Length: 108
Image (cartoon, rainbow, N blue to C red; front, side, top):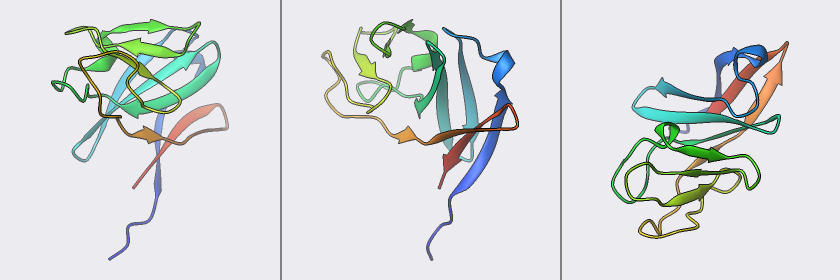
């Protein structure tokens, strides 16, 4: 059975200003949604090193990265790739759209 992509509503754009972060749950996934200098990005909210929650970390808007608060691994919000050890496995990224001022994330 192939799964069809589904768009889930996150929040109005006005509720996630630049520098804002939000975690949403969908089925068994936790997704971190970030506003990096006006660009909305979504990644799996789970450090691939020890499952720490990334939305509790520090968002660097200059590089569009988030640092895991547990051990300092940094993840690229565009690719999900870790940029600093101890994490070395990428996390999943999700397509984001904005429709009628509502942020939506595409999940499968």
